[in-house]
Amino acid sequence: MNVEKLFKKLLEFKSITPNDDGAMEFIKQYLHNFEAIEINKNGVKNLFLYKKFGEGEHLCFAGHIDVVPAGDGWDTDPFKPTIQDNKIFARGTQDMKSGVAAFLFAVKHTQNFNGTLSVLITSDEEGEAKYGTLEVLKYLQNEGFLPNYSIVAEPTCENEFGDAIKIGRRGSINGIIKLYGKQGHAAYPEKSINPIHQIAPILPKIAGLDLDKGDEYFSPSKLVITDIRSGMEVTNVTPGMLKMMFNVRNNTHTDKEKITKLIKDNFVNLKYTLELSQSAKPFITNPDSKVVRLIQKAIKNNTNISPKLSTAGGTSDARYLAEYGVKTIEFGVLNDSIHAPNEYTKLEYVENLADIFSEVIKKF
Image: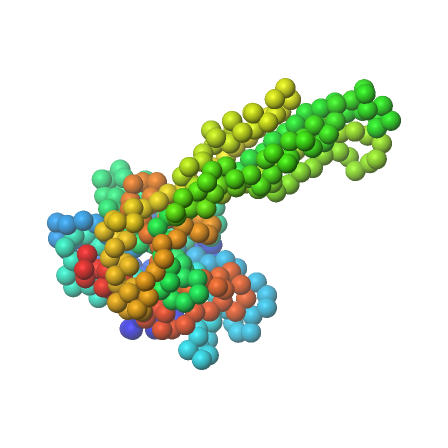
């Protein structure tokens, strides 16, 4: 089975989160000479396959088999891969069955490796991701078997295949402020405390504020207000409370404590509550680390392109691997139609991706 046939097979599984539709069993059989660990929880399936070739370091390829629902607007059946002009259309072509197919093919055809080679696949990345990759990492930590390095095969390229790898990701902090006043009649403002009036002079000081200067890999962490609501949708009652929601895609220079201080400094003498939750933590992998150098060289050898080192975009399971101390990077096909109708990638990208992963393994 060449990489194209493998890719098509994976695309045929209707693996909408968290259902794997039999994909995990197929993958387990595909890598039948690897040891298998299955960790299933709350309807989520996780598969960890590994093979110890030697006494060297542990390299793990990670990804997800689940996809978002197809939705409307498709010109072809989203779960019957269709090839037109060397483009293959189906849900998950970019995000991220192309990456899974490429690393499974590369790993299967490895004959010699000075260390342990593994793959980690979950059916719960597009959902809440509570019982996916995290559960496997908890298990591996308890067993003293965490990888040294990981390559997550998410789609990372921006304009042409090979132009970008991710060596980190921003985190995400969500905030809710409730500002309390005193409800009253609009005709008697002196008898009420209007939280809308209280927050009005504060907004220019915090809305869209850069919380740091960023650095060569990260853009500044910006406070983005996403919702403000108050009142009862009438004109003659001043509200007693205002609720404001915001998000900060934070780099490694900003954390919850910094945001708490910002709010405290600007809401002096006001009655308010602040809730902060971090759904993802930022991370950065040293650009001089072994995994970054090897993937850069392999991309250059196969595409004649020198990829930029990026931290742009949202979140992925790479954040969990990094949190457990695994030196993690991401590299995959072009990212320009993920989650959209008529999602597609080029077959040559998937073949090149498999070649790049094979070279990394060989040179590791």
